[in-house]
Length: 526
Image (tube, rainbow, N blue to C red; front, side):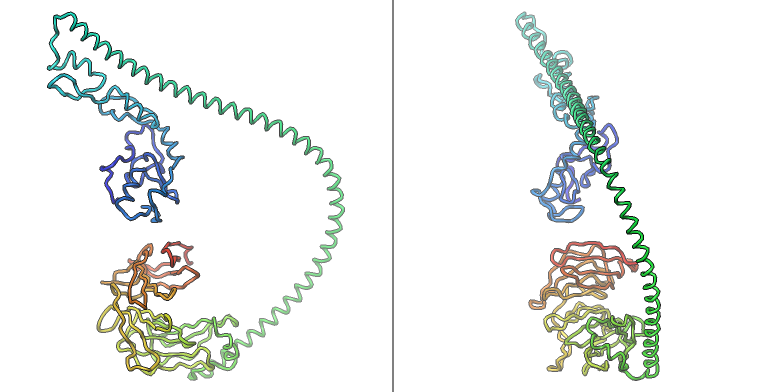
C-alpha cells in the first residue's frame, strides 16, 4: 500500500480477537480486522483511518475497483460495524496482565477504567510505571523513595485517611464498572425479550388473519366449483376445434416442406452456376455478371484483402449479406502481408506490408471490381502499422520499418497527387508501437496497446489530437494487449482477442468507455 499502517491508528490485530473472524471483515490496506469500517459505492470496505490516509497520499481512487473516491463520498459500513462490535477482544493492557475479553463496542470504556492501566509512582524521585491497581501498595510499602513513617499522630492519621480514600475510590470505580457491564447485559436481555414478545403478538394477529382468509377462501371455492363445471364444458368444445385446426396445420406443413425443398434446389443450382463462371475465368480480375447484380447493395458487405500468410497475401474475398456466402474476387498485384487498410471516398486502400512499399486501391461502387496500383509508393516497407482517416486526413501510425526497426512516427499519407511526397512526417509518439489498435473518435485518434520498446507488450492508451499534434494519456487497459481487433460501438471501443505479454492468444472481449476509460469485461469468445 501507499502508506504504512504504523503512522496512524489501524484496525484490530487478529490475535486479539477471541474467536475466528470472517475474511470479509479484514481491511485490505492494514490487513487487520476493520475498525470504524467505511466503504466505496461498490461496497469495498476499509478501516476509516486507513482509507483516509490512502486517499491523502495517493490518487483519489478506490484501491480495489479504481473508481473515483474521496473522503466525502465514503459511506459507513453499518452491517460490518454491528457484527464487529459484538466480537470479544482482549484488553489493550493484556500484555500488562489484564485477562478480560470485552465486546469491541465496550472496549474504550473498559480501557479507561482498567486496573492494569499504566500509572506513575507519585513519590518524589521515583517515577516508576506500575499498574493502576498496584499504585497504593507500591507507593506505601514497596517504593524505595516512599516517605518514612512519622510518629506524629496527625500525620499518620492523614496518611491512613488518604490511603483509605484511594482504596475506596478504586473499589468504587471497579464497582461502578461492574454495575455498568451488568446493566448493559440486563438491557440486552430485556431488548431480546421485548423483540420476542412483539414477534409473538405479530404471529397471533397473523393467525387471526389466516382464519378470516380461510373462511373467505372456502366461500370462494364453492362458487369456483360451479364456474369450473362451466369451463369444462367450454373446454370440450375448444378441444374439438383445436383438433380440426391441427389437421389443417399438418397439411400446410407438408406443403411448406415441399416448397422449401424446391427453393433449396433452385438456390443450389444458382450457386453452382456462379462457381462455374468464376472457375472458367480465373485470370480475369472482375466479378461475373450474376455477382455484379448484387453489387448494388455492396454497402455493408465485408471485404478481406491480403493475409499474414505469404501464400494468400494477394487474395481478396467478399461476403455478400444478401447471398450469405463468400466470393473470391480479383486478386491484388503485390503481396500485402501484415498490411493496413482504410476506406476513403468509396475507395478501399491497402497500404504496405512485409517488405512492401506499394499501395493498391479498389473502387467498391464500380462494376466490375478491379484493383488499381497507386501511382507512387511509400518511401519504405512497413508492416504491423495502422492507418485511419480523420477529417479527410489519412494518418499512418507506428509499425515496423524495414532497415530502421520499430517506428514511433505518425505520418500523413498524400493520395491527391498534388505533391511529390507521398508521406509527410507529423510527429513522434512517446514510444514506438507495432501490432496496436487505432480508431478515430470525435476527431481524435485513440491508440491501444501493441508492442513497445524491446517488443514489450503495452497496456497503455493514448489520445492523439491531429490539430495540435499532442498526446493525452488515457486510463490503461486491464492488462498488456497486442494484435487485437478494434471496433467502435456507441461511446465504447470493443477490443477482441489478441495476445498478452506472454504471447498467449486470447479469446477475451473488453469494452473501453471512450469518455471515462472505464473497463467492462464482456463474455469471452468461443
